[in-house]
Length: 111
Image (cartoon, rainbow, N blue to C red; front, side):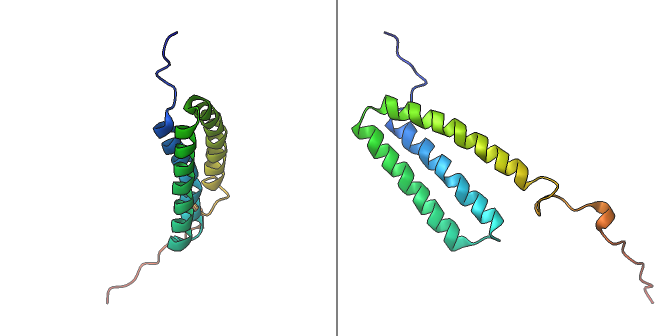
């Protein structure tokens, strides 16, 4: 039987879970006006999720946990992309301002 070199081990699973869990903290930081405490709490939760998945994959069959995590990651990434596109769409406060809506500067006489 050949070895699958793309298979997640316990370290890969823990790291991938932490990276998937940190994205909501980044979105919260951007949308909340840079709330450091809330972001730190969410980042701590992401670290806890990563540690939990690492221990779970280390104690059980990591190939099953890795496969579940890969499939979950695909779904999460699709959701993250949809949210990011929505966040930076024309209706978002993060999109660049319309040049026509910016008032023209008036010339000031230097005297």
